Amino acid sequence: MDDNIVSTDRLTKRYGDRAAADRVSLTVRRGEVYGFLGPNGAGKTTTLRMVLGLVKPSGGSALVHGLRPGSPEALRRTGSLIEGPGFFPYLSGLENLRVVGRYRGLGRSDAEEALERVDLADRGKDRFRTYSLGMKQRLGVAAALMGRPDLLVLDEPTNGLDPAGMASMRRLIQDLSSEGQTVLLSSHLLAEVQQCCHRVGVIVDGRMSFEGTVADLRGARVLRVRAEPGDRAMPIVQGAAGDVEQNRDEDGRAVLTADAAGVDVPAMVRKLVADGVDVHSVAVQERSLEDVFLTMTEAGR
Ligand code: ATP
Image (cartoon, rainbow, N blue to C red; front, side, top):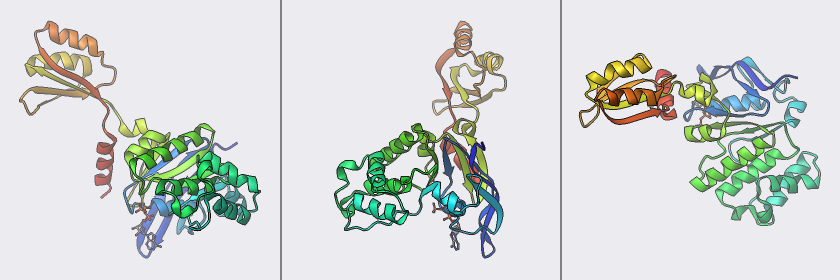
């Protein structure tokens, strides 16, 4: 069985002479939460629309469950929430889901089950218009879940939510994932993608600039040693870490920076102290995703 639920090959959409998506190749594997990350206007929605068969590509190709996007079988096996859910404000959450279910030829129990899965069962009889934004979004996910699709495509599911609403949506996605649901979601928020996605694709100005795990995206971890005198610390840190860069912090102390891979930190600190070096701090830091993302965004311009 093919483990890629979605695969696109140089998928392109041009509007006039501008490419909203430019040769986008990405793969979503069965069982993962894939974060499609990019700033506003990068081409996320356009790409997701092509994957769902809502927009016709100008070039390249896409397969969803090994099928052409938009084909009846691909649609049956895909649930989506794209650009906000459309619900009737005067109907309850449950009634809205029943409308969706009838439209899709599903049974009445599907609506109840979907409400349970997004943790809205106790508010199911309240009118949609009384829901908070977070509840509205969760109801949108419930609608997408009806009929138990293999793939869930969510376009910016936390957009506009307050921190509590975002956390609740993240928990929902994690719960669905632990039940084995494959999810493709878009976001412009790094922290979010970092917290709930297995793999990430980064799109900038219509082009994919990265695809891999969050750890791959961050790259190497950095060792940072603040110590005096710097010149005496230098050969010891070099001996432990290889190439070392020396700078000064705002207090004028030497800061030695190197790749942290394979460094025996306690042994290095013992040597520094034994050699009479004053060690003010030692840190092994991951590059912030923010830094990585900014570098990519700038490189893409
Ligand atoms: P956002 O997070 O702001 O929704 P996005 O990454 O989803 O951004 P898209 O909505 O895919 O980005 O838009 C990518 C580019 O394509 C934008 O410059 C947008 O203006 C343009 N675009 C999208 N749809 C159309 C359209 N129907 N006609 C013309 N241009 C379009």
